[in-house]
Image 1 (cartoon, rainbow, N blue to C red):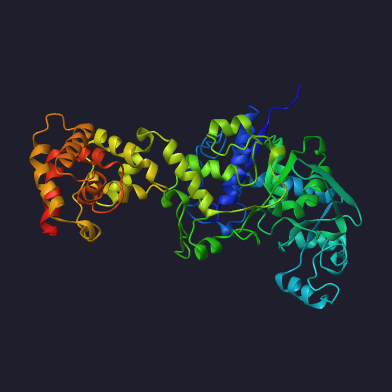
Image 2: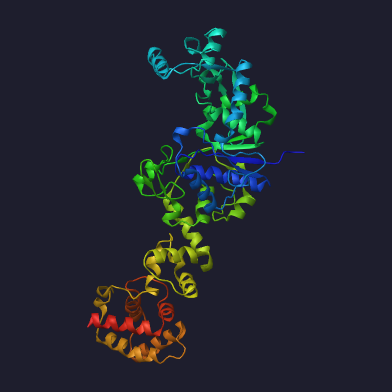
Length: 509
């Protein structure tokens, strides 16, 4: 019987969540749901120097907004907790010591100054960036070069030390990647990574292996930038005797800058004017603010849909897919090997399509919050639903609803009379004076009745309907935009329509 699929997203609480990180979550989530598995959120907070207050809560809020609720997490709990690495600290030393006992790791007592000296002394043209590796380990202060008694003395007297993996020389490590196929590495190109730090906290390399084993993770998806670390992790699985339990790996392609030249960064977003974080983030240490997709006006459905397509497709050519459809169709073998260029215009297109696709009821709370933020009071939800239905096809981002619908709630402060004047004449002035009592007398004040009244009076005055609709629109809206003009008149009501016509006539006189 095959194992139940278990995947994990293991972020560090060090700042905002880049859209590349959210895509990693998404592919994990889709794979788990498609295969009836578990999605685990594990917080990798072993580097206490980089810990940022509020970052963990931010991660949970991002996932909740995107509709990706973990089955197990520090909040939800679960059978394999705790789900914060800092709370699992005691378990890591046992495995680090086991590696030392097996000859696969060693104690290193080098100070920061000694490490700096090593990088200077052994720097050559052939080796411009010396590393703590198989070539230099025997020149350093560690349990491979010191006598057993000296090692015991140093440890018992409290001298700080780290535990490093002892990378073998000239071995080939290989594994099968679910996206890239067979991948192999020569171990001589990899340095002796630190596994356990001075403070007893594990580094990512040890913690990720120990935790994936303890939490029975079956599949591990991560960014391709982690590929160089793969030989270290594979050897740890091997040395700890867990190879039969090693997850299947998939290294996801990068999200690239719009020009395709390198990985997309926060700096690129700042420079080009688009968000790269899921939600607004203010770094409490520096006060640096970064705008998010949510606050820019993206629907979570659109954000998730756009991210899924950044490096994957189902082969059908269909681009607009709901979360349920993504779950149904997702397969890791359709993830591309190459990086995906980020295109903000395409991202906005996804949002526009989702706004058009959404019901007014779905959009109501978001639109209401935006309008009220801009000083527009919404007192009748049914009226708001009607307005949303009329204008949503004209909106790309949620803040567009303010401009596209405020005239339904407020008399326009400015009327673009300059766009009316070039073709304005006495006949039209008379028409708009005469139409007012006609509209005032309508028992059925509907779009159809208003249009019929306009046509009848226009025919009687020998004026083309097309010449009346633009000035009428500008009178009601303030400018040359908005949905069907007779729908606008019917929605704002008889009294408001007459008030706006009168006001415009005064300005045109």
